[in-house]
Length: 202
Ligand SMILES: C[S@@+](CC[C@H](N)C(=O)[O-])C[C@H]1O[C@@H](n2cnc3c(N)ncnc32)[C@H](O)[C@@H]1O
Image (cartoon, rainbow, N blue to C red; front, side, top):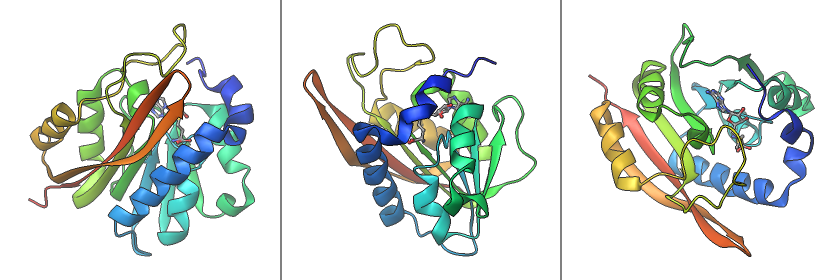
């Protein structure tokens, strides 16, 4: 599989937009999800670990899942994450893990996965009953957030109502949206939502 983030990995953490966005999303996740030391958490599309780093100190086990070896290499090289975080370089839509989690978090990865329906199914199968889901991504945008020729972008953001209904159809309850951050650029304004939900306990 081509690593679409190979070049981006090099300076990912130095980009102001990325840093501001991940700080805001991580803070919102920590406010909304009651992370605790007895919890195991997956960061889906963990990248270089900017969200992982904010959640890992609060929980017992943390797994960073990503399909980009270059991004995960950066995560694994961070001394504060080395002993705390397991990395898995695998497409879990194709090859699910043989374990379940108390929570799944994910930031800005949804729009890189073509089949959202299957992704939500994948999240549901990797969560324990009552488990938490916390997903952040762009609200519906006009397609200008990424450069026109970029590969691997399948969605120009998401409509909150449609995504909320999809989550409910897959057995998620207490679906709540908030605006975690707004990216302000000369060429546009791009709100980013955080949706939290819980997998039904039945
Ligand atoms: C925009 S980056 C966000 C990285 C990180 N969450 C952050 O906020 O800095 C999207 C990440 O999703 C990963 N990704 C794309 N498709 C994926 C898939 N099917 N499974 C896991 N990760 C995927 C990419 O490799 C990339 O690291």
